[in-house]
Image 1 (cartoon, rainbow, N blue to C red):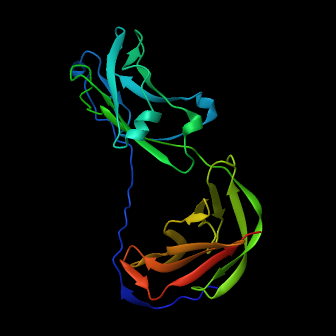
Image 2 (cartoon, one colour):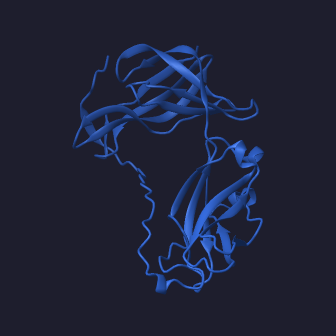
Image 3 (spheres, rainbow, N blue to C red):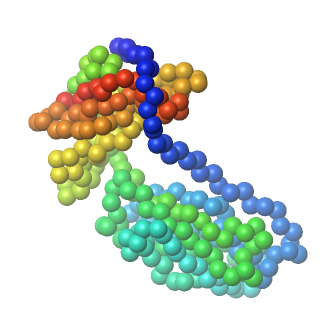
Length: 263
């Protein structure tokens, strides 16, 4: 089914790839621990919001000196003002009971106001040089998101001008309230294990550049479908796309019409 074409043009691609790894706590001798020795366990936390949270997100904090009860100031910051409207600190401190080596920073939020498909990023900071562990893990970047559950809505027909083929395609839709945008997933669209996801809001498709699952070569990396414009006509949802190799900064010539005819 797959029919690959030659690469003939170099294009400018802006790709942001990040890899977040938990920070490793450095070893600290007991005599070096300050009055509290408080620290986060890592520098990054990806948090899936659920109804079981009861609108409270909790972030773990450790401390080295557990002799007495302690209170450590904590602040919250974000580059997006709207995030700080949704996520707030009910208390400006994290409280440790005597003998406790861990406690939680509580962050309140309103589940009803959380937008599906959106990642909210904010930073929590422990304050006070005399209270923080020499490990210096005094800040943590929290990325809170609402996990989306997809359900199959049937089998449609996918047509690819790039691959010069048409095939039966399962279509899944996120189980969300009707007043929210519709999120769709085409599981294993071009290749098994690689999905194509897109959002429809007010009759407009939003779709990002996505890995189709075909490794062009070790040097050039995977092929991506990179939509340039979209349209909806009846049950046909389509996007004129370039096919690119972000790893190599290359693109295949031409623009191709890719479409899914909904079940």
